Length: 205
Picture 1 (tube, one colour):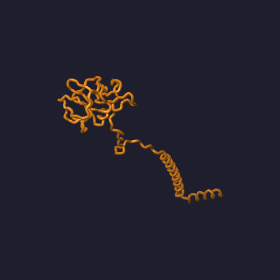
Picture 2 (cartoon, rainbow, N blue to C red; picture 1 turned 120 degrees about the horizontal axis):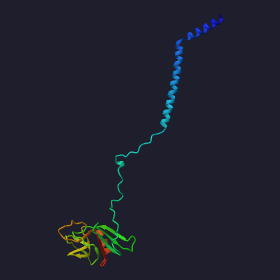
Picture 3 (tube, helix red, strand yellow; picture 1 turned 180 degrees about the vertical axis):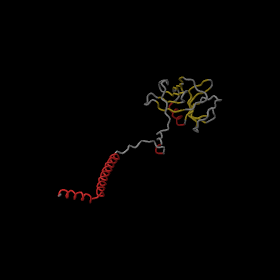
Picture 4 (cartoon, rainbow, N blue to C red; picture 1 turned 30 degrees about the vertical axis):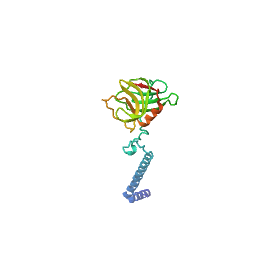
């Protein structure tokens, strides 16, 4: 009888706790589990966020991405042709319309090189020598020229180097037979100083 009374009292005590207390306990347990999962998720996100993404390299289309201009706009000077002969000489290329002033005693041996504008007729390839020089005169095109250095005559056409006094490069008239090979005034001065009478002039194709 005594045991029965004690057991009944425990049942009554649990009954007094009621279903609310049980539910509350379950709710607290569930919240604890949710909190633990949230904590683990945040930790994983933090770890993932620690590795910073590598920025991809892209090419901007704005002004900052514009190409750097060339340091020099000066055209490349053609190398002295290997078929230009030997010794101190003026070399004229019909193909490239370039002149080289060559002195083997100097380093480098090409003391100057520059483009020229030929007349309507070109001299035949070969080796010549300066035979006449004139400080200033009127060219076959009627322009005033200076530093005229003549080196050949072929079929009535006189071939020589010169520069116009006004520094202009005239348009060649194909109907007129002219053998004047024109350069700029500074280049004409260089050639004049370099090529006295009897200086070799080599014309190559």
